Image (tube, rainbow, N blue to C red; front, side, top):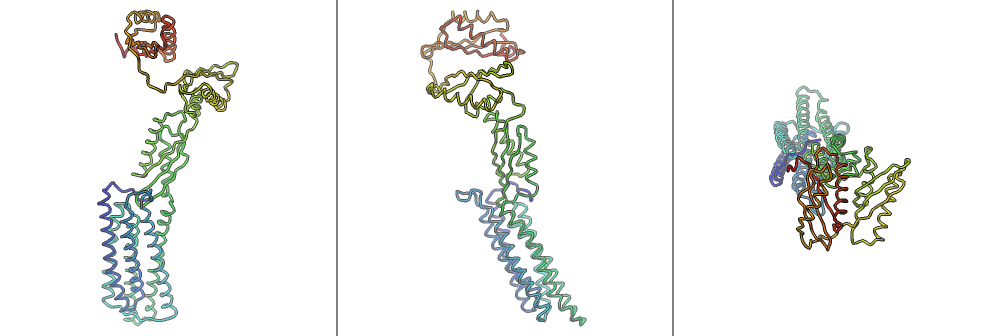
Length: 476
């Protein structure tokens, strides 16, 4: 797998790729013309096969020139993965043309070896044209290879590979002409077969190049994943903290761009925000293997072995898009009895709320078979923002509530009382300072007991909200 390119501006990338492809077209036009003229004048099958080869090089260079211009177009409504596969299709057409060249060369070589004799005239022009052609092939192969590596262009890479083999096949033709010339000088008759034999060697080189190109382009067109990359991605994602499993990894390539689709298992108790953070971490892990890849991650909720009964109850409630709190679980003779509070839209009727809670409890029993019975306290979840009628200033009530709080040895201080009247009902809130070492369960018990005492002392209170603070956060 070739590495992904660095980030370049689309305009400069397109211009540089088209310039390299355009120079290749001009070079192919000149070389094809020269080889055809010399091949016809000398009668050399080796040179004629090279001329045919170069003619197809010209067609392939034209296809590449147009394909690199189209492939860099951005995605649109009809081509949502972009136009990058046009480069793979261009390389596939080039492979087909190479195979056609190979078939013609083999056919003509067999005729000259076994059925007819053609006199070869190895001229100085023939050697000059072949050496000139080899020099041009070296130049354009180097340029195309450099641009292909820079922008990870499959079409330009195919052209670069193609022209690099032309240097070797051209050298074989030159050797064939030298052997024919040597045979004439030394009167060795069988050396006249050196030219068609060299042509067969050229055909063998073409078959080799065609096979390599065919495998690469067909893999790209069929969305084959680069060798070993899927395993690397799976390993990288598996090490992301919070990922429980990697269920599926799919990779496809369009031009120089990769697309990766993953399905990963995550704890079903995760919040939506935490899931999003994990998706970002997975995306980063994939891009460490395939830089700049377009990554799509689908999270799957999965139960963890470490889940306790409370986690399992909350997971079922989350699946129903409901909030539960104040969950209490008692083990009575090996059977679990659950008490919980659930919040429902205050605009629902009692029948609607009861039906929804009944369905929730049935699902909880299926998911946690150890549960013997469930008692659910239904609370109304506010759907509208209330506007207090007034903020009450009642120093006497505040003093009385402070006296009540002073009866709790764990409470160090109560302050910031706010008393409001909402829809004719009295609401009170305050801050409560406690020791920072207290366990949260004890803090909750103290809060609950203090709320009860406040309401007992002042029955007119409809709702009490107490905010606990550690003593290190609020020194008074």
